[in-house]
Image (cartoon, rainbow, N blue to C red; front, side):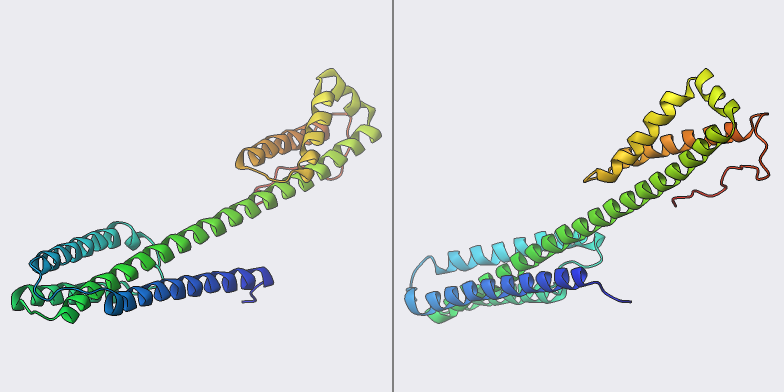
Length: 254
């Protein structure tokens, strides 16, 4: 299947955006790791270290639970839940939880180990945030593509209705010119003003910037009126046509 140039451009721009977000968040995470390792000092004998580890352990467990809930109720409804494998994020969170549990049990006095615990919490957190961002971006892109496809379908239906309506109007005009009885019938039943107004309204949609579903419904009503009017004109006793007009069995704009 041949891919259009516009589709290639959108795909390339989407990939560039995802790569840019990945490197930006990776850079932020790297700076945080370096800051914790070289700029922040953690006293090895501080009394609050165990409380900090307990807080990190609880936060990791809670965030993993919320992530699984989001994966179940939100991500599972989509074909893809972002560009990051959710299994990887789950395993990383489990690894962080086990590491915090190890620190709580061992009660070690090495500050680098506690710094590693903080980093083990920030790593899964950054992956989770990146996953949510990529998911929301993919969801927004999918909705935009669906909206564009719907708009294109509505435009195609509207233009087809206008084309068929114009052909029907031309046929009615030909019958009016060839058979005075048809002209008289249109004027006596006050069809003529409505006929001219409907075809004018239909042709005005050729200049519309956006066509909605209500516009298509309006065009359908106008088209069916023209088609029924042509049927009446062809069935007039004064009209002798070798070709009998019949309604289309299928929708002409489908």
